[in-house]
Image 1 (tube, rainbow, N blue to C red):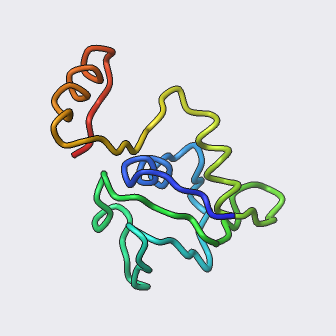
Image 2 (cartoon, rainbow, N blue to C red; image 1 turned 60 degrees about the vertical axis):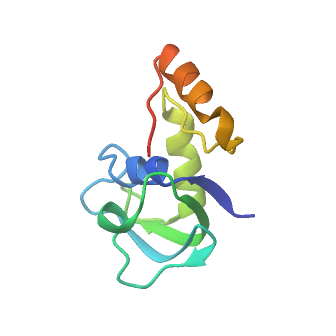
Length: 114
């Protein structure tokens, strides 16, 4: 089963040095961005928009620990997500109520990714 997240959350995962030691790398990554396949030269840090919806379909993280074994990209992401102190949400709401939602998010100290 695929794992979904917001673009901002996937970028934060991808850039977290604690979960990506220098020798770690992704092999055979398959992600969808807003339901579409991405080209091979897709650069997560440059090309991914924060409010996009990312679906992690497949892939392996290799050489991330001393064992040299690989781990699925989905599992690695889920472990990273569990270790976080914040949550990134993708929300759908009626356009007429957006300002109310934005005000509520700001009132509780949240950050908006537009």
